[in-house]
Image (cartoon, rainbow, N blue to C red; front, side, top):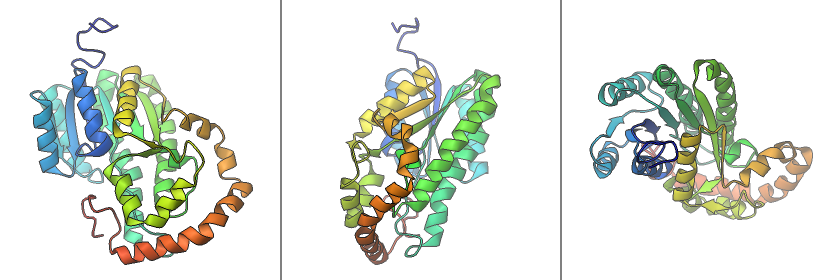
Amino acid sequence: MSIDGRPGGRLAGRVVLVTGAARGIGAHTARLAAARGARLSLVGLEPDRLAALAAELGPGHVWFAADVTDQAALTAAVDGTVAALGGIDAVVANAGVANRGTIAVGDVEALARTVEVNLIGVMRTAAATVPALIDRGGYLLIVSSAAAFAALPGMAAYCASKAGVEHFGTAVRLELAHRGVAVGTAHPSWVDTDLVREARADLPAFDTALARLPWPMRRNTTVTECAEAFVRAIERRSRRVYVPRAVGAVQAVRSLLVSPLADRLVRRTARVTVPLIEEQARSLGRGFGASTPGSRR
């Protein structure tokens, strides 16, 4: 029996919709939430993986193939979730991508796609799910990043999108509070997912630059640890989630990370690493990691 009197834990019987659920953080969050009694709606771009995960979780879970940049597809996924499971209690807006290259050397369409998925996709996910969340007094967890707090060369679009996600979540929190919907933003550092592993493999110079970051910004967290933090946030309707928790200290001194002094320090390394990143990105021949749908862009 859980502390709130429901068998199976605080999530027993609750409906949780997760975007980017086919792999990585999304899939692991779905597994942990289901283990605590939640019914999952899995939304993503890889139907085979979504179907396999739903089958793994067992009866009472559904999946929908949808691109978070496609409002009609998101609306259909939400309508299908409500029809099949009766409503939505929590949403994890997790879908995200990371492009390769810089503003000088790289595919501008990949830059734009990163912002479109990471930021506009979050906006579209929120817009599609908010009516159902209002009906249940639910919880919206928007996945930003520790990259929202610091600018990293070679990650301009990703950092911009995640900073936008953070502020979008802060504003939406205030908009929805009187409607009984709680909103949280999640800020993971590097998590051991396909996205991060492929970025390091594709761009060795980028991997070297990450290793020089101060702790905890260079720490690599397991996907299970991150998923546990997300599920805990759903249970507690948390305002902020830091993975690892020490990232919260980074947020507290964020003004220093974008100061002229920080610029000077980062430029020392960037003079060497950025040309290498650009050379490696140019030879890669694609704008995203190999496991990203449409990675040839």
